[in-house]
Image: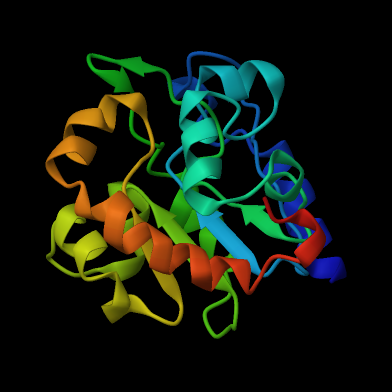
Length: 195
Protein backbone atom coordinates (compact mmCIF):
# COMPACT_ATOMS: atom_id res chain seq x y z
CA UNK A 1 0.00 0.00 0.00
CA UNK A 2 2.87 2.41 0.74
CA UNK A 3 4.05 1.82 -2.83
CA UNK A 4 0.67 2.94 -4.21
CA UNK A 5 0.69 6.04 -2.00
CA UNK A 6 4.13 6.84 -3.37
CA UNK A 7 2.91 6.34 -6.95
CA UNK A 8 -0.03 8.70 -6.36
CA UNK A 9 2.29 11.39 -5.01
CA UNK A 10 4.57 10.88 -8.04
CA UNK A 11 1.60 11.20 -10.42
CA UNK A 12 0.47 14.39 -8.67
CA UNK A 13 3.96 15.88 -9.13
CA UNK A 14 4.38 14.73 -12.75
CA UNK A 15 5.27 17.45 -15.25
CA UNK A 16 6.70 15.33 -18.07
CA UNK A 17 4.62 16.88 -20.84
CA UNK A 18 4.35 20.42 -19.42
CA UNK A 19 5.70 21.99 -22.64
CA UNK A 20 2.77 20.50 -24.58
CA UNK A 21 -0.01 21.57 -22.19
CA UNK A 22 -2.03 24.79 -22.41
CA UNK A 23 -1.82 25.30 -18.62
CA UNK A 24 0.65 24.22 -15.93
CA UNK A 25 0.30 20.48 -15.19
CA UNK A 26 -2.47 19.56 -12.78
CA UNK A 27 -2.76 15.74 -12.73
CA UNK A 28 -6.28 14.69 -11.76
CA UNK A 29 -7.15 11.22 -10.51
CA UNK A 30 -9.11 9.48 -7.77
CA UNK A 31 -7.52 6.33 -6.45
CA UNK A 32 -7.72 3.70 -3.75
CA UNK A 33 -6.52 0.11 -3.72
CA UNK A 34 -9.87 -0.68 -1.99
CA UNK A 35 -11.99 0.42 -4.96
CA UNK A 36 -13.99 -2.36 -6.59
CA UNK A 37 -14.40 -0.44 -9.87
CA UNK A 38 -11.75 1.30 -11.97
CA UNK A 39 -12.87 3.90 -14.49
CA UNK A 40 -10.46 4.69 -17.31
CA UNK A 41 -11.48 7.59 -19.52
CA UNK A 42 -9.42 9.84 -21.75
CA UNK A 43 -8.29 13.04 -19.99
CA UNK A 44 -9.83 15.71 -17.76
CA UNK A 45 -11.85 18.42 -19.50
CA UNK A 46 -11.48 22.11 -18.81
CA UNK A 47 -14.07 22.09 -15.98
CA UNK A 48 -12.29 19.21 -14.27
CA UNK A 49 -9.03 21.13 -14.65
CA UNK A 50 -10.55 24.29 -13.17
CA UNK A 51 -12.18 22.51 -10.21
CA UNK A 52 -9.62 19.72 -9.73
CA UNK A 53 -12.54 17.25 -9.81
CA UNK A 54 -12.79 14.50 -12.47
CA UNK A 55 -15.91 14.18 -14.63
CA UNK A 56 -17.25 17.46 -13.27
CA UNK A 57 -19.29 18.39 -16.35
CA UNK A 58 -22.19 17.27 -18.57
CA UNK A 59 -20.26 14.13 -19.58
CA UNK A 60 -19.90 13.21 -15.91
CA UNK A 61 -23.61 13.76 -15.29
CA UNK A 62 -24.50 11.37 -18.11
CA UNK A 63 -21.87 8.85 -17.02
CA UNK A 64 -23.26 8.74 -13.47
CA UNK A 65 -26.73 8.12 -14.93
CA UNK A 66 -25.36 5.31 -17.09
CA UNK A 67 -23.59 3.74 -14.11
CA UNK A 68 -26.64 4.24 -11.88
CA UNK A 69 -24.36 5.82 -9.28
CA UNK A 70 -25.04 8.72 -6.98
CA UNK A 71 -22.53 11.55 -6.97
CA UNK A 72 -21.56 10.44 -3.45
CA UNK A 73 -20.72 6.91 -4.63
CA UNK A 74 -19.00 8.14 -7.78
CA UNK A 75 -16.62 10.36 -5.82
CA UNK A 76 -15.94 7.76 -3.11
CA UNK A 77 -12.45 6.43 -3.89
CA UNK A 78 -13.17 3.27 -1.91
CA UNK A 79 -15.86 2.43 -4.48
CA UNK A 80 -14.48 3.93 -7.69
CA UNK A 81 -10.93 4.71 -8.80
CA UNK A 82 -10.69 7.18 -11.69
CA UNK A 83 -7.48 6.67 -13.65
CA UNK A 84 -7.63 8.51 -17.01
CA UNK A 85 -5.35 7.79 -19.96
CA UNK A 86 -3.96 11.30 -19.53
CA UNK A 87 -4.02 12.98 -16.12
CA UNK A 88 -3.89 16.61 -17.29
CA UNK A 89 -6.19 18.69 -19.47
CA UNK A 90 -4.62 18.41 -22.95
CA UNK A 91 -6.17 21.54 -24.47
CA UNK A 92 -8.79 22.34 -27.07
CA UNK A 93 -8.79 20.84 -30.57
CA UNK A 94 -10.83 21.55 -33.71
CA UNK A 95 -13.79 19.49 -32.50
CA UNK A 96 -13.58 19.07 -28.75
CA UNK A 97 -10.62 18.47 -26.49
CA UNK A 98 -7.32 17.16 -27.78
CA UNK A 99 -6.47 13.47 -27.20
CA UNK A 100 -4.74 12.48 -23.95
CA UNK A 101 -1.00 13.18 -24.03
CA UNK A 102 0.77 10.01 -25.28
CA UNK A 103 3.46 10.14 -22.57
CA UNK A 104 1.03 9.55 -19.71
CA UNK A 105 -0.46 6.05 -20.12
CA UNK A 106 2.81 4.13 -20.71
CA UNK A 107 4.35 5.85 -17.71
CA UNK A 108 1.55 5.34 -15.15
CA UNK A 109 -1.18 2.87 -16.13
CA UNK A 110 0.78 -0.30 -15.24
CA UNK A 111 1.25 0.93 -11.67
CA UNK A 112 -2.38 1.89 -11.11
CA UNK A 113 -4.43 -0.72 -12.98
CA UNK A 114 -3.84 -4.27 -11.72
CA UNK A 115 -3.68 -6.96 -14.40
CA UNK A 116 -5.04 -9.89 -12.39
CA UNK A 117 -7.89 -8.63 -10.28
CA UNK A 118 -11.55 -9.10 -9.43
CA UNK A 119 -12.13 -5.38 -10.00
CA UNK A 120 -14.38 -4.27 -12.85
CA UNK A 121 -12.58 -1.90 -15.23
CA UNK A 122 -14.72 0.54 -17.21
CA UNK A 123 -13.10 1.54 -20.49
CA UNK A 124 -14.79 4.80 -21.43
CA UNK A 125 -14.13 5.80 -25.01
CA UNK A 126 -11.78 4.76 -27.80
CA UNK A 127 -8.46 5.76 -26.24
CA UNK A 128 -8.91 3.55 -23.16
CA UNK A 129 -10.28 0.68 -25.24
CA UNK A 130 -7.46 0.80 -27.79
CA UNK A 131 -4.85 0.78 -25.02
CA UNK A 132 -6.30 -2.13 -23.04
CA UNK A 133 -8.15 -4.30 -25.56
CA UNK A 134 -5.56 -4.20 -28.35
CA UNK A 135 -7.93 -5.65 -30.93
CA UNK A 136 -8.88 -4.25 -34.31
CA UNK A 137 -12.56 -3.71 -33.51
CA UNK A 138 -14.35 -0.38 -33.63
CA UNK A 139 -15.77 1.18 -30.49
CA UNK A 140 -19.26 0.22 -31.66
CA UNK A 141 -18.25 -3.43 -32.13
CA UNK A 142 -16.63 -3.51 -28.70
CA UNK A 143 -19.63 -1.99 -26.94
CA UNK A 144 -22.08 -4.23 -28.81
CA UNK A 145 -20.00 -7.34 -27.95
CA UNK A 146 -19.09 -6.19 -24.44
CA UNK A 147 -19.58 -9.67 -22.95
CA UNK A 148 -16.46 -10.86 -24.80
CA UNK A 149 -14.40 -8.70 -22.44
CA UNK A 150 -15.95 -9.98 -19.25
CA UNK A 151 -15.32 -10.44 -16.38
CA UNK A 152 -12.61 -7.77 -16.37
CA UNK A 153 -13.64 -5.00 -18.79
CA UNK A 154 -16.81 -3.08 -19.61
CA UNK A 155 -16.30 -1.00 -22.79
CA UNK A 156 -18.47 2.12 -22.93
CA UNK A 157 -18.85 4.95 -25.44
CA UNK A 158 -17.82 8.38 -24.21
CA UNK A 159 -20.79 10.10 -22.52
CA UNK A 160 -20.01 13.49 -24.08
CA UNK A 161 -22.93 15.44 -25.58
CA UNK A 162 -20.83 15.31 -28.78
CA UNK A 163 -21.75 11.61 -28.93
CA UNK A 164 -25.51 12.22 -29.13
CA UNK A 165 -25.54 11.21 -32.82
CA UNK A 166 -23.80 7.90 -31.99
CA UNK A 167 -26.27 7.26 -29.16
CA UNK A 168 -29.23 7.96 -31.44
CA UNK A 169 -27.88 5.61 -34.14
CA UNK A 170 -27.09 2.92 -31.57
CA UNK A 171 -30.04 3.10 -29.21
CA UNK A 172 -29.51 -0.58 -28.35
CA UNK A 173 -26.72 0.60 -26.05
CA UNK A 174 -29.01 2.38 -23.59
CA UNK A 175 -31.97 0.00 -23.97
CA UNK A 176 -30.25 -3.40 -24.03
CA UNK A 177 -26.59 -3.23 -23.04
CA UNK A 178 -26.58 -0.61 -20.30
CA UNK A 179 -29.12 -2.35 -18.02
CA UNK A 180 -26.98 -5.51 -18.08
CA UNK A 181 -23.83 -3.53 -17.25
CA UNK A 182 -25.64 -1.76 -14.41
CA UNK A 183 -26.47 -5.12 -12.81
CA UNK A 184 -22.78 -6.05 -12.82
CA UNK A 185 -21.76 -2.71 -11.34
CA UNK A 186 -24.40 -2.78 -8.60
CA UNK A 187 -22.79 -5.91 -7.15
CA UNK A 188 -19.68 -3.76 -6.51
CA UNK A 189 -21.46 -0.80 -4.90
CA UNK A 190 -22.50 -0.90 -1.22
CA UNK A 191 -26.28 -0.84 -0.73
CA UNK A 192 -26.36 2.52 1.02
CA UNK A 193 -24.86 4.35 -1.99
CA UNK A 194 -27.12 3.03 -4.77
CA UNK A 195 -29.66 5.33 -6.43
